Image (tube, rainbow, N blue to C red):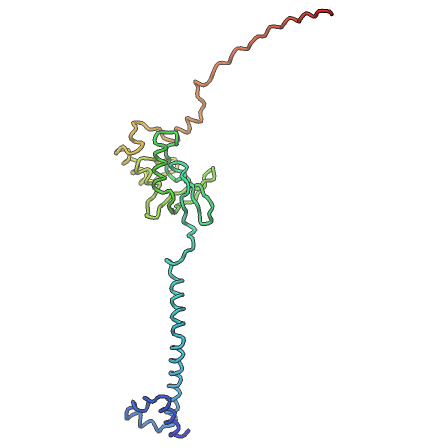
Length: 242
């Protein structure tokens, strides 16, 4: 290709290409191979810049969508580990609603609250209700007892452990038959010393003893059998002839 045509194309396509060249570039201007290579390089660069400007807004929008989709704070999918407290049956038994809107009965692990008919039984239920009813909680543990209930620790969103809070405030015993926790033992001892909750009574009855005594028949309820009644035979009625 003639050098004059190359110069004309370069000047029309890149008007600043000729004016901004240094003396060194001007020496290479008459090298046809060098100018053709440079021309196509600039044409390619210009095409890429044009395409980039054309699609830059679209790429930016797609980038925002991708970033928003990757942000965990924007996801609204229900967490399978999150439950909502919808029922408080007693101090240590809850009704929870899972992510599938199915109700799960949970028995608080390692502790035992007074029965509802015991002293402080209703107070324990109220304490549990005030602390967690209507709130979202997580479970630690998923064992099942013989009644089909989930046995677990219940933890609120602020990190409060409901099981430990009940013992700490004197509304539950550590259920030592199923718990070896030294932390729960220390919390119970502290509540005893401070006479919190049920420890205000001098000698409160543990709920497991209360349930056992309730199942046993009372000896004073046994009554001596009543003597059988003796019935005398009635005399036949006299019948009169017509």
